[in-house]
Image (cartoon, rainbow, N blue to C red; front, side):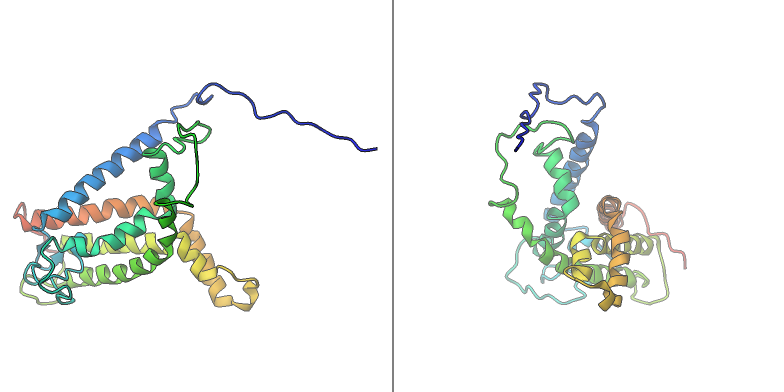
Length: 263
């Protein structure tokens, strides 16, 4: 004998959600913080000034590759030449922005906060259709791996900028100011954020069938996995650090105050 078990369809729930907690707080805060960062970063990128205060260079303008860069800020040369007439920041921001925009955590954050897709767990979304990331423009999210490689290069450049912070205004080494600490902290947080990325975890240990045959990659994979567990924390800390580092350089460049020197 064969028995057939019929299961009822999904429950008909008319309410948008049955949650009684303040589920809207998290997406609202995320929306506010990301919106303010986008406004600030856009303004600074197009301002095209107050981004260099010897020996500190804003991370929004590093590396500065145009001939229009402030004197002393082009440590890697003016590769863009004279043809670029807009802000030098627009030459390079597409790479760190692309990495952060396609980040797996940030996708979740701004999908919920800006597109309400969905607003929160167990909360119905207002969209009738869902195609995932299979159509334009969301299909471009698959470029995250390549932005990850670019982010690694920028981490090295920003670390070098922080090392240059051990100079004084005359270019002499052996000095350290508060700006040095700010740039070092920003470079460290951006590096940890990049290394905790899901793509980094896959690059290090993905597609391995036998970890025992790759002990070095397995050990690296365990380290990256520990960082990956705190990827959300590093994502927010690095977002604040890069804005603070840029703001600090701008305050110095506009003579709002002098950089405190420790030695």
